[in-house]
Amino acid sequence: MVKIIDIHCHLTFDEYDSDREQVIEDSRQVLKAVVTSGVEPEDGKDALELAELHRDFVFVSLGLHPIHVVDMTDHEIGDYQEFISTNRRNIVSIGEIGLDYHWVRDPLKIKRTKEIFVEFLELAKELDLPVVLHLRGTTGGEAIEAGLKLVSDNDIRKVVFHCFTGKPQLAELICKEGYYVSLPASIVRSKTMKKVAKRIPLSYLFTETDAPYLSPDNEEKRNVPQNVKVVYEEIARQKKSDVKTVEEAIEGNFGRVFGVELKSD
Image (cartoon, rainbow, N blue to C red; front, side, top):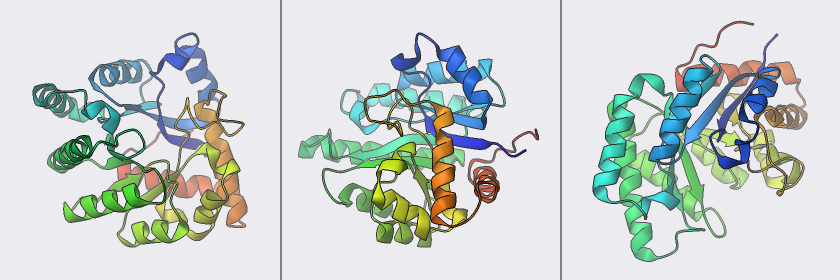
C-alpha cells in the first residue's frame, strides 16, 4: 500500500517537546516519509540528531529562514554553510530559505536577506541539492515573484515553493519554469489553494503540513505530519481523481526532486 509524504514540517520545534516520539510514532502509521526543516544552526543540529534516530522515515532539509538572517553575522552564517556542506550526505535539500516581507520590512534588512538567499542558492548548486523556498509577502505575490526571479536568474533547477499561497496564474508560471508547488494542510480553508490544486498538474505538486503550524482544523491548534492526508484528499477532489493516484504521483515527484528512493511497504 502506498503511503503519504509530508515534505515540510518542523518536528524539532518546542511545540513537540512533551510528546515528540509519540507524534513521530503516530505519523508512522500513516506516512511513508517526513522531511523536517532546520531553520537555523541549532535547529539544524537537532534535526540531524532526530533523523538519525528515525532513519529512512525522517529526512532533513537544512536552511536559514529569512527572519533569522538579520540576527546573524557573516561569520556565523559562513560557519553554518560549512556545517551544511559537511552534512551533505545527511540532508535531502537546502531550505527553507527565501524572503519574508511580512516580518522583515526594513529596506536594509530586506537587502541583506536577499543577499544571503542568493548565497544559499549558490550553496545548493555547489552541493547539487534542491531548494525549498519560504516566500511570504504582506499582500499579493510580490515575495513569490521576487523569489521566482532569483531562482531563475541563478539557474537553480530543482525548486519547491513551500506552503504556496499565491494565485493559480502564478503557480502556472512557476510550473512553466519547471519548478514545483507545495500545498499545506490549511488548503481545506483556502479557495485559492483549492484552485491551485485543480489547475496545476500532479507532476508539479507536493504535499506538506508545515507542522506545528497551519492545522487544517484551525490556526490555533497544533498541527501534526499525518494531517497531510487532507491535502491528498483535497487534491484528489479538485482533480476528480482518487487518492491512490495522487499518492503515486507525489511519491514519484519526491524521488525525482529529493533523490530519495523510499523503501517498499
